[in-house]
Amino acid sequence: MFFLADLFPKLPLGPWVDSGVDWLTDHLSGLFDAIQSSGNVVMDTMTGALSAIPVWLFIIGITIFSILMFGKKWGVPFFTFIGLLIVENQGLWSDLMSTFTLVIISSLISVIIGVPLGIWMAKNETVNKIIQPILDFMQTMPAFVYLIPAVAFFGIGVVPGVFASVIFALPPTVRMSNLGIRQVPNDLVEAADSFGSTGKQKLFKVELPLAQGTIFSGINQTLMLALSMVVIASMIGAPGLGRGVLSAVQNADIGKGFVNGFSLVVLAIIIDRFTQKLNRTPADKAAAEPAKHHWKGWTALAVVVAMIGGGVVTSLTSGNSQKESIKLVYVQWDSEVASSNVLAQAMRQHGYEVDLTPLDNSIMWQSVANGQADASVSAWLPTTHGAQYKKYKNDIDIAGTNLKGAKTGLVVPKYMDVDSIADLQDQAGKKVTAIEPGAGVTKGAEKAMKDYGIGDQGWKVTPSSSGAMAVALGKAIKAKQDIVVTGWEPHWMFQKYDLKYLEDPKKSFGSTESIDTMTRKDLKQDKPDAYKVLKNFKWTKEDMGEVMLDIENGKSAKKAANTWIKNNQSKVDAWFK
Image 1 (cartoon, rainbow, N blue to C red):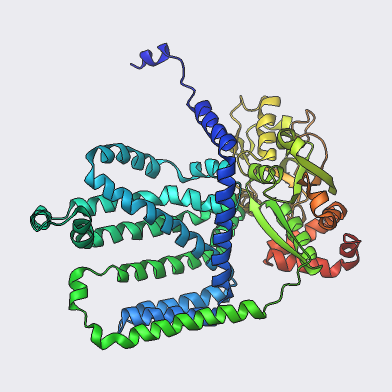
Image 2 (image 1 turned 120 degrees about the horizontal axis):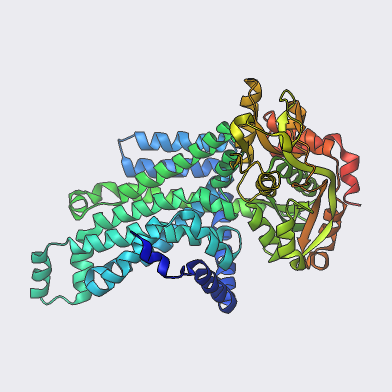
């Protein structure tokens, strides 16, 4: 039926898109850099201003605002107060402020673009026919796809997160603005025309007031979609609650996922209720009795002044004694969470300001190579990250090896009666439970399927995440079931369970590896003291195992790092000599 399709060559859509993105990054790099720099300044300033307000004052202020808006309806003020208290109690206040900034800025940009565009579509049918399929494309394209050009244009951080969020969240505002203007009754429009109204008068005095409810519904949807992008944007370094959710997903940490998810829910409900309350129709405004409520305006003004004053006092009284700043990135494997947090905490204790960002593996390498990040202690060489090293080796500096004797391979419980990859037959349902797609150890497992010919016998590699793999391993061991996983050492699972590597005579996973420290090319010249610390950072598999096991047993990464540092102070001090 589709034989005609075979008569035509395959269209190179992928290469065309790649070429287009490459052209834009080559020719508009200056514009993108300017947007990124200015965007970072705006976002950092807003987040800093919000974070400077004392937490207790912020919570009380927002609660008072909700009381003024909702009056005798105590549900929203009560939820606002209790919800924000819980967020602070869980130590997520700074993440909440970062998320709030990202959502507000991306939503504001979406409204600034979306409302005029929707009005234009309502006024011009040709524009409407052109924009509608573009909006369909923006809404149906998987949100993850937007991360690729975002990173290509703006690198990592909050700016590409805003860029991706705007693309994903813009359509509802455009569509509802278009719909709202079109739904204005024709007789009212004709009446305005008959009285000699100009186009501007007709739009602002008749059409927009009558379309206000519909437009606000679109804005409300845009806010919610921007919130839904928080987790996805965290994959490219956007700060906030999304990082906690992403970390929980990757490590199968139900509790952490719930706490961060609950904080997002609190923020979403507060924003949703406040925006709905702001959406007052002309009839609602006419029914209001402003003369009786002057005290509300003065109360709101007093709260705003108090919050701003509290923020200013906090900013003036907080000293900054940081020696030097450093941006570290890492991939969220258990081993790299341990090493990155130990180094970060040690540097903080010695006066450095450390920005620690979890990223996808490939983006981690790219961010160091293009100078978006200063360094990473997560380079597994020569095999696991061999492809990334080959691609970026001219743009990075390998400062040294921070851990020797690392190993990757296929791992099984010791009770399984199999010792080599070549001996695999029908164990574990002919399935290898792997970690993230594209990870070096996952690619090694796929290579092993070919090298040993077991892929032809029905064996498959099933990617998941490091956390999901660990959970599956624990459940199988508890039930004494067969399981084959992708494993690496050091890892806490070798301390917790009786495991063994399957022999790999064909070296599909390569030989013993080292974990190296990589930096951007000019870090040694720009920050020689920090570079020296990175170069001196060294520890053992046993050291890393202690930290990983503490994290697995319930300690936060920071607390586990601080515990290890306290118990190994002389080793840590040697890094700074």
